View 1 (cartoon, rainbow, N blue to C red):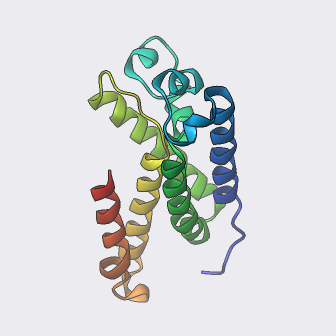
View 2 (view 1 turned 180 degrees about the vertical axis):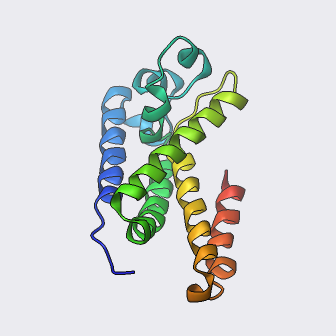
Length: 163
């Protein structure tokens, strides 16, 4: 359980911030209050019709787009807090694998259950990180005491209520 150097969490946060700046440039700085559907689609939002037309890259790009400054700040704060813990516990490559697979699973679920809506944000990937923390906390419960009950499950419940 040696502390590891946090790399990918910081890179992912930086990428989301850069994409938000690009979003502001493309869509005008009114985007800070809320992203329009046209700009979101142009930059890679997840949408069933576009995916069915073969634009599968949207399964990844949507996770770097955020609908407003508040959306960006909440997701990046969550990624910072949860991401650095998961990257420290599992290592940088397993962290990146968990993040990408979780983001893809979130995209596929969104594609499956939403017909005419757009999907943006890193929430699916962040929930996957939370799930990996739940696994880790359960697997190492003898070392961590009641961390699952007192910290991990309340964070998951809070995030589910926010969505």
